[in-house]
Length: 252
Image (cartoon, rainbow, N blue to C red):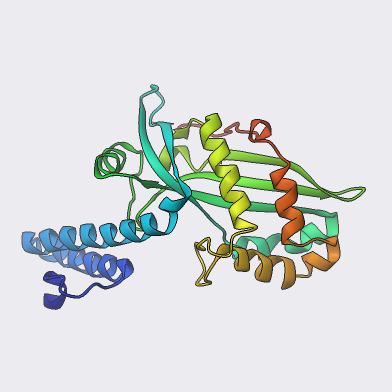
């Protein structure tokens, strides 16, 4: 740990988070305040590295103003963010047989929000129901793209829901925010430089194409490719995106 204290060498955010966890464990066992202080410093440093990396990757796509209701009494907070999409292929693998058997296809993306400035980062860290910022962003929403294959492969609907009211609150899905999410969906199916989320692949385009359309035979089964999906999303107006949360506030 003594080598990490001076931050002479930039390690991954995950490394700093792991080191902070170990120090907090020692603090809980010994009550040594120095362990707690060092853990907080490591955690903060790792968060800032991850934040800088996320800004570098996604600021080029523009920012959006986001408002969220943080409790059942109606209190809201607002700030400017860069957003990004992430896709978990494990969830797709669990449902791909159902897609093929029942002739439909869903893509469900998790959406993250990256604070544009320090003031926004601090306010949301302190006021969100769960202001976890370990990876340089807060969770924002789910964006689901639903297709059906009745008389041809067609986009049925795009819908957005808050990620979890007990985590990021109840998001206000403004026209601006829905438009931004639509733009990122288009990037996911067209831009080979758009960074991926959960996986180690270079870009989200390859993740979707290789691990959903090709690996599981979706492309040949439905007779589609990335460009077909892109064109159908492009033709879908942000005004038609459904944004109705079906969640409840946690009981006190």
